[in-house]
Image (cartoon, rainbow, N blue to C red; front, top):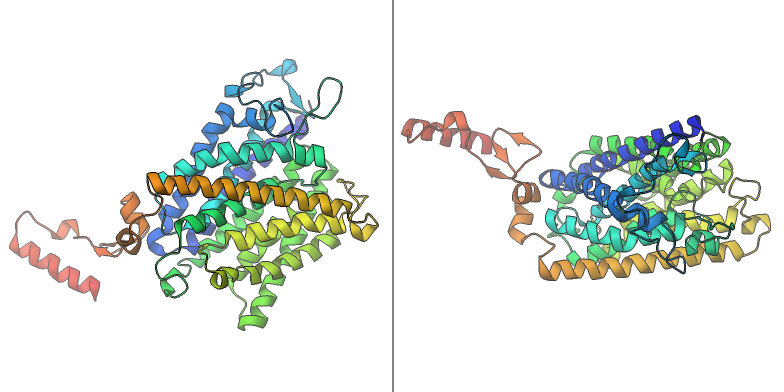
Length: 455
């Protein structure tokens, strides 16, 4: 065990956990004022639910002994983290860190993957239905897919017995382009189709972001945490972590410029929303590739991802699906760009040691990257659509039209993010100190106050 490596991975795990509250701000700022709490609650709900499921059986299903074909680990082998809790010299290791530290690091990956999906169904989803979906989806989709991509276990003789995508096929995905972003983006598209479009989609100006400072704060927290996401995936305080760190700076920086350039040329204005979204698009794209590309190629990837994602977010208006906060346009498209770009520009001298087309490697690596991407995309989309459809037909996934118009914060949570002079969620609530028990004078005062507030 190396204490420096252990300290870095534990710090990285904390950074990645911070990304989910950061995502709550990022998504929350992009919703309407009367739906921001519901949006943020879906992220915090993911932390609570996935955290419990990961300890119970998620880690075991992802990194337990493969049940055959590289498809799933044994969910009961390490149930409740049995077998990984020893300390001191008897502690089991993953590389140079205690396995229990690795458990924590991988847990926060599962959490944010689930939270990412929620952005596609903003302003119209029941919180209870979302929690049911999150629990079923993470068990049936994320845990198996993470096993496919991240499990590199070997048997006692050194033979590979891990996941079929990462270890079997040889797909390069350093920190989760397939398992996290393509996985979440495909599920987000499926849920957007199941729930249907919001009232006034594409026409109602109230669907615009209500708090752009929240959006930029959230993007900043995401970028900060992403250094743990990518550099922490080196599982050590070493040169690989440094390599991933600098690429996690270069790519989103270039992507921000790419997105803003598209905005300026297309719309005449470079916006704060575009800057925040461009940074996230670049972070998504570099996630699988941060150990495979040089910093120069990372900037090229970022520029490409920023520009393409800026154009891709408009597809929902042309194709008619209501992905509220552009999870598809940023995470699915950005994840695909980053994963496939490895097949073109992977440097054989990089830590990943892959050889892309531009370095004379032919189309072999690009083909592998494409197979892994499409497999995850189809599996996640189909399962998410089925899960969402069943929930919608049984307990109902979408709030009523009345509750959607009033705002999901009040109708679902009986709360409001903003209380301006007694106006909560769009409907007037009497101010307590102005309302007496049967006093006509106080009732008159309350009525006068209502008129003033409404005016």
